[in-house]
Image (cartoon, rainbow, N blue to C red):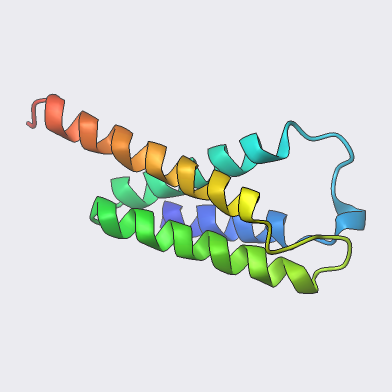
Length: 106
């Protein structure tokens, strides 16, 4: 459920018209990296196999980027954003894989 809420939050933020966005946000690519790392982490923690979590989050990010094309004041289809999304998702699933491998299970 938390992964679904995370996806909804990303979608709302990503599909908000440019005129309604805050004027001062941290570096855009960092926002993408952190948001999609969080989403992939939540998906992995929810029990989705890590390869599927990564794939689903990357596909979600690509879909959101292309949906932004129709949103006023937003430029969609940015490959740099897609790369930042993918790197964030990869970082999260790699971290979860390491934690699962090296921490003892109870």
